Image (tube, rainbow, N blue to C red; front, side, top):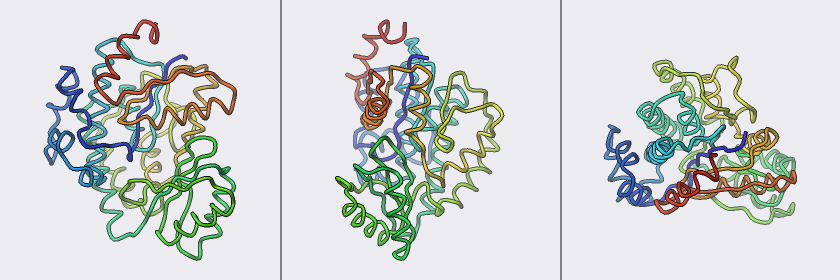
Length: 315
């Protein structure tokens, strides 16, 4: 295995996302124009204000549409990888790239998922914070020590020295303070709109599981690692059950990247927006003395530059 696609999660959305791609690549434009959602997708992506775009019921289908469009361009160019994975919402981009469902179902699933997660989050005053510079055990211990202030837990294990915690706002604030006392370099609040990957998402998980029963899943055409297990997907596993679990359990992204590195992957292409996942890969690879090359696709210029290197990367 050489090349892996990475699909970004919530938090990397931005106003105007994909507008230049829409204007430049016919395959991207065809995907966006073909999607029929409960809101004006193109208008939200290209002209919507950041605050509205950051509401999970809009973030998720907009991010999915961006990823589906970029994937369509890469597929047309014959630039498909041997493996894929994504962070949280991005996992659905990896499943789409692997051929498990088409672009229409991909975006339809994420629109439903976003609505249900927004409903599950309603009325809950929660926060997410990225903790830099501590080992997972120290973060887990701090969360346990702050239980008197409310619910808080690690929800993303991103890379060495970075975990994300989520929970009730008072408990997250207490944990941040304690973590800084324990030596955390920084605690950075994240721009997400709900207590994702926590017990509060259980109703959304149940609704999603029922919804997925109506969606046909094909067998994947490439290697996948999954958020919940942190390991390669196995045909014996029930993928729909794992997606129900994913919405309310921690994301094991560092473990996913380690599995790909162990399998020989050395080139990672992040399909954004943003370049967060490429940074996680570099830190994870450095920890195990592996050399990697990363590329990010956030703009039309990024995609043009990658296509220009097609023979070098995908030969």
